[in-house]
Length: 146
Picture 1: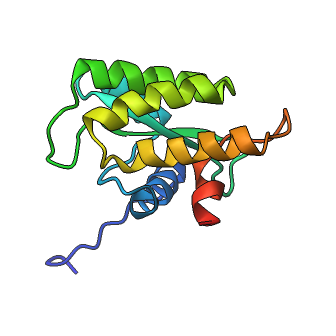
Picture 2 (picture 1 turned 135 degrees about the vertical axis):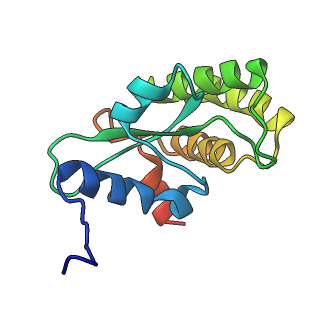
């Protein structure tokens, strides 16, 4: 009708955004964005790495990010950010004992950070039960098993 219109957005980008958005509760964060948004927005909005995910219908995994805000919606301190980045880098390099040290510094500043606590748990698990060299380092399967 001339008085009513029904608009819809469709396509790969919309599907991807919907799948990423559906993971916010799983990771206990208010906002998640993919790599393309991180590349565009990281100069304006400080973001932190969350995980690498497999998305249905895609052949490659995707890194996801969330704004660098704590539970009080305040930006984390520069020291916290550096320790978190170091922890993620060491974790991805499978250096779990040193990743723990970095994540413990983050936990000392904010003991309630969900992602830091999960990374600490994963480091402990992977130190006690070493992974195969080709095993993925994703939080999602670890969290799903809990």
